[in-house]
Length: 296
Image (cartoon, rainbow, N blue to C red):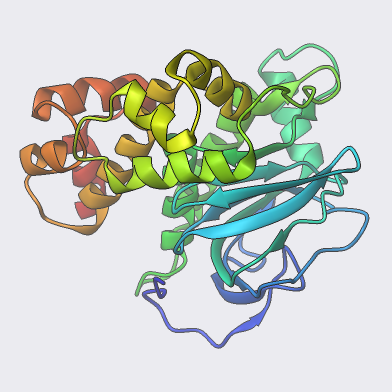
């Protein structure tokens, strides 16, 4: 489990009171709060849900999360970098089965509504609850915000505010809707089968993962696997695998000095050019630009 760069006395989270706050922005930001927190296994939030929109990015080892959607229990296995979006007032009662280190950002609903209006989004803003999301760009924004309040120097309010606004814009673009939340998908893989497939993907990102191999891990036919995987995750196996590889590459670029070409090979990309094209397409950044931003 990672530890913050700047040591702080653990205290109560301002986002989720049952969490232990390891670091955070406090009242430094007008429209939101940024934290790194530790949630103990079995902990849970208030029955009426959070008062602000909350984005959570898992940053520890694999952990299982249980929550309720429309009165039906759900359970998924989270790996480092995977996220959830819990809209204000949406009571999902999430509970981790293992201790989980999390990065959290809470956004004021009125501010997000104002940004959506300025973006010409028609109708009142509603965020769709999103659990078990693999979104490297979302993870990068949250990680940058958290890191700003863990460095040896005082946080730069202008930089933090600009990152918070970028995160809000990304949420409006990817999770905003005018109607009710999307219906639960039917016909997907059983949770245990899906977890086995995702664990296998995470353990084999540096090599080829043919569809029949993934189907065999799931214990279903290859013809059924793609349809069932998409029903469970909202993405094809290839799309999901690309996002996992991008997340591993992003972390390596930000936390190591390994050459970009070597990172590309270790993360399953054909070469550095392949990684560059894919990362630019999905995040708008190249590996070199991402690493340069870290160094700055």
